Image (cartoon, rainbow, N blue to C red; front, top):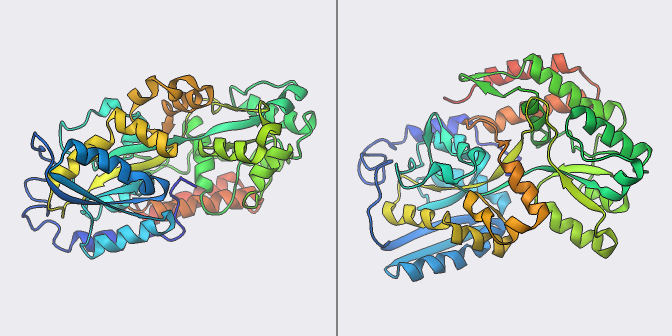
Length: 423
């Protein structure tokens, strides 16, 4: 999965410890006067090392080769490794001051790693913030300063069986009331065992739940303080839990069961990202063709969905800051963004890339592009992994009927406040 949730968190103590290890001792690449400053004009020169993960990391060399063809005096060495190893590998490199020049970074990790002092602030004037989806750019901003730029993005829509919806006489849901009716119709008249799958409980449940919180007008943080115990948050958790209480959604979904259940018609709908398009085409084959579609998230006070993906960062210990940032700038050019999509199907963070080709013509891809205009990420904070665990636990307890939304949000607020934001 491409949402970057990691089972083990590096605690805030790591961030505080590395910050105190001489990151502000001045000198080239150590957070001195050049940090956040201008990048020299002209061609890139010299060598840089780049770390990247997953399919994007495996294909990054092709983009690096394009860059060096345009900048023949530069050399880019790419190291690719699996997603599962990424978080700890980056944390270890930062702690030991053995960082690459550039790396790909999970968007929800930005707050944690920026607090270590290891990241170079984004150079003023080098990137046009307006060229990126707003929610994607926000993932790079920590305490008012951008550290890096978005590289690729993903968001979530409602996958649904159109044949079952037609049988039930229900259309794409526009709001919460219609989403409930949609799930009921798919189950009771459409013949699905479950109207919708929301994948609750355990690690990563916050990604399913937070869009409903944002739709209700709630948020995780306001003015530096947690806001997990508000009427809006309780309303969202009550609504989310209603799907399980009414038997419309399964309380547990085994790995792979969501896809197979959707193909068989046992699951009428589920919420997920663009990677599921290829999975459904592969597993469903010709028999499923024309029997499914995607719908935008329902709108209450807002119609917000989750935005994930990856950012690109430059490290303050780099010995070749100019070329590092020039490579990042190249990777976020429309041409490179289009090539990344062609190579691995990663959705571009630069909006101009969506204005031509398959991204502009394919109705499913266009739906994801439209949703990206209203998509958010959790606030960038050093302690997000720990706070996410607290939210996950509260969601699971409500879904299982162990506690009620009011008690759960009160406990979430108290525990998150005790953890703090790491600021």
